[in-house]
Image (cartoon, rainbow, N blue to C red):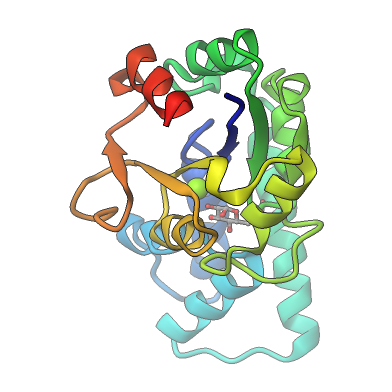
Length: 217
Ligand code: G6P
Ligand code: MG
């Protein structure tokens, strides 16, 4: 049976949180706001605009709309300069193994990400051709935990939401998958992602037998 496997990007396929951290820290510190890695954790799965709003509220700062857009653009320029060097070595362990198994078994494969840089990153790590559908921050209007991103991916794959499976590292993403009536697989800690149907620390813990069972379900 054909299932649709929808992958989040940041924190699932590649670890870009470290680059977001550097760029947000530079911006926050420039405004005299402290920025810790714990705060960076809270920005996982959160859109660029909402991330800046949160940083400003943590630092009790307000900006004019012009300053806000200027800083958003600056943050993205910095982020792009960090990701410019990315290559296949940044693909998280065993992601290619699972992708190849799904391709060999003629399953649907889509990306469901909040990032507006998703296509550029997939190109850098040479995975773009593995995806039959790409839904990202450039073509979604409602942020996770709204299910829009995953429902659009299912539509593009022409597979019913109940036959789709989502890999997600953020709480909002797991909630979005559940709201879309899809099987949710959390990638990260069980405590944080307890709302997911299954949780694994990373793809090295996901066996081919597990994927086979999911396909048969
Ligand atoms: C993902 C990341 C977030 C990031 C968001 C938007 O969800 O986990 O940290 O803010 O994408 O990414 P972008 O590349 O468009 O700034
Ligand atoms: Mg993510």
